[in-house]
Image (cartoon, rainbow, N blue to C red; front, top):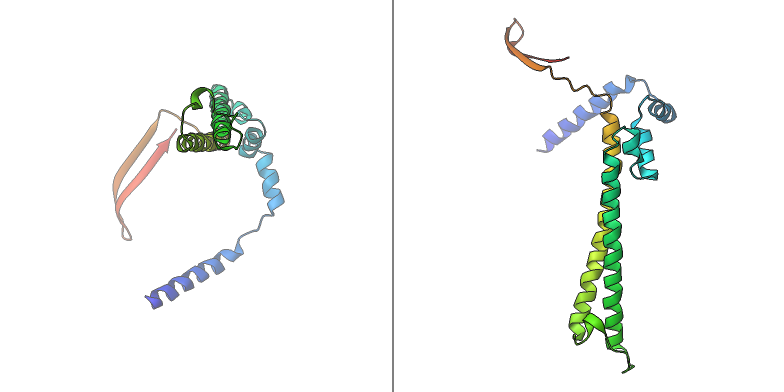
Length: 183
């Protein structure tokens, strides 16, 4: 096992030495090349990160922008609603546990025990956290969607996709030859 590991390390080292003759491209020129592309995934990602949905508009997928805004709007609604419920149950819990006998929980919280009030408060706190994480998830997904759509912007989807295979017999090789034709 030890000898196999050493042999693997030597093969990796030889491979890295063989790759050292490659031409190096500076990071700034790589950034400029990507930025100056006719339809840049970098632009789509930046647009989508700055203004949600604008990356989808840049990619000419106009129908996705309302979906992005609906998803983010739904998350904002649940953040607001769960935050209000959390504050209500937190204030009821505080009113129940303070020293002043004149402050009592009212409304829905009236007549509930300390344990029930605490459980409701923790439940809505958990929902607030889930709502924020959902918002971040939808925001990240729309950025990823804009990037992937920009990468696939010039991808040709033609109806003529064919796969041909033929047996091949040669002095050096015997097997199947696969050819994929995309028109």
